[in-house]
Image (cartoon, rainbow, N blue to C red; front, side, top):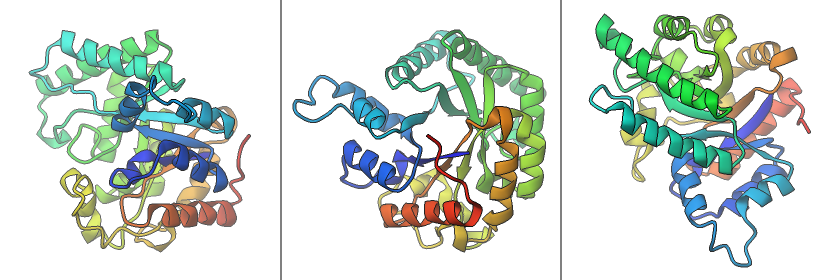
Length: 288
C-alpha cells in the first residue's frame, strides 16, 4: 500500500504546490492526490512558471507520483450526453498532462434510497458512458463511497458495482463514510475488495460529528473543525482497518493507494502525525 496526501487539505492555505511536494517527500508520502480545482490552476499556469520549476517535474524529481485526480463529473439526468462527454474529455486531458490513470468522481448527487428503478438505470447508463470514455483513454473511473450518492451505503454500493460490471469503473472506498452509513468498516473492506482501487482515510471524535464532513462545512473557510481528529484519535479504530487494507492490497493489487484526507486545522502537523502513525504501527514501508 502506498500513501498520498490530498491537496484539498490545503484548500484554505497560502502554500505553493512545490512546497506541498517537498513536504510530502520529506514525510514519506508516495504520492499526491490532486484536487481538480488545483489541477486546473496548475495547468492554466503552465506557461508562466518562469524560474520556478514546473510542479509535474517537481513531483517526479522527488520520487512521487500523482496518485489520483479528484474531480466532480456531473451526471444529473437533466445534463445531456454531449455535455457529459465534453467535461469528461476535459478531465481526461488534464489527467494525461499529469500522467495519472485514476479519475475520481461521485455516483451522482442522489441518495440511493430515493432513486427509483428507472432513475437508477439512467444513472448507470451515464456512468457506463463515462467509463467507456475513460477506458478508451487508458484511465480508470473511481466512484467514491459518499453520502447522498448511489454509493452511500454498503448494500447500494455492492448493487452499483455489480450492475455496472464495467472493467474501467472501480471504487475509491472512503472508510469513514461507510462507517458513517452504519456499515462495519471491516465488513465493507472485505465485501467491496473486488472493486476497490483506492482508499480515503479520515476520522472524527464521534459518530455524531460525522456531519462535519458535509460539503457545505468542509468547503467553508469558517466551517466547524472541532470534531475532526487524527486517525489514531477518533471513533474509528484504524488499527484493524489498516491491517485489513494491507492484506487486501497484497499481490496483484499492491499498487493501491490510500490518501490521508484531512479537513481540519494544522494540516502539515496532522498529516505528518498520521503517516508516522501508519508507518510505525503497521510497518507500511515506503515504496520506491
